[in-house]
Length: 258
Figure 1 (cartoon, helix red, strand yellow):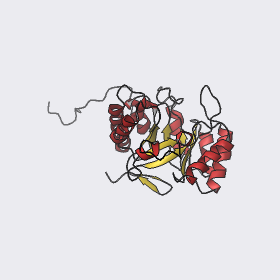
Figure 2 (cartoon, helix red, strand yellow; figure 1 turned 90 degrees about the vertical axis):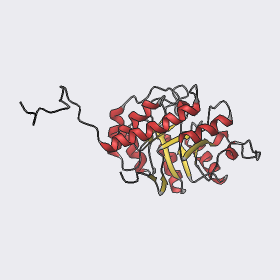
Figure 3 (spheres, rainbow, N blue to C red; figure 1 turned 180 degrees about the vertical axis):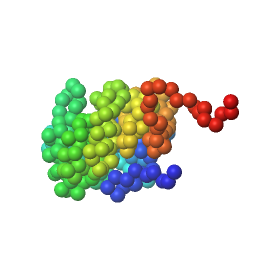
Figure 4 (tube, one colour; figure 1 turned 120 degrees about the horizontal axis):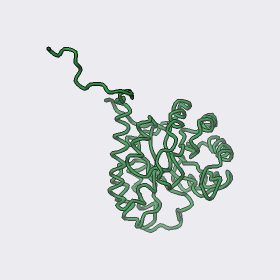
């Protein structure tokens, strides 16, 4: 097959797996997991970054920016105003014009506030950001986010950190048909098969953190997720056989001498 890079607003990536940097037991383990994942995009919560820490142990110094594209995110923000402020802070600190935009609407479920998300998206797009909003698996909201200027949409597969896997595959199929920007499943992936299922649906990528960082062996799971995303994408492009109610012989009877 021809090269199959993921392109988001002119940014080209060979890997379709995006990974986070939170929840690891040690920074060393995080670095090893990033390498094993083969990811090219690493998301960092702006609120977690101590921009005054210039030591070699600071989070930003542990990530090789020559190898990874940093995707700042606005995790932990509950209003459009907070999300906009942290996106601006990340850009002013030299992280990126890219931003994974999160505006949480409920503290217990961590579901997004889509009304506030649309407000923040419009503001940041006007300010020149490349906005990748985290949202529900709602085709209508995803279409509105694209209309607001989002460079990609990031619908959840299941609640953040739940590990439940893809709960509404049909919604993701509809979203893929509804929008023309890349669709990246974000949240809910618990194991490699979840990532494969998402990619076999035809989404453009998968972002995960807890599924890797919370595994018993994060480095091994990162490797598994890498292979799962690649496998799912390859299977989607290859084209699965149709589902049938009854059996079809693998060796047809036609041409058999009797």
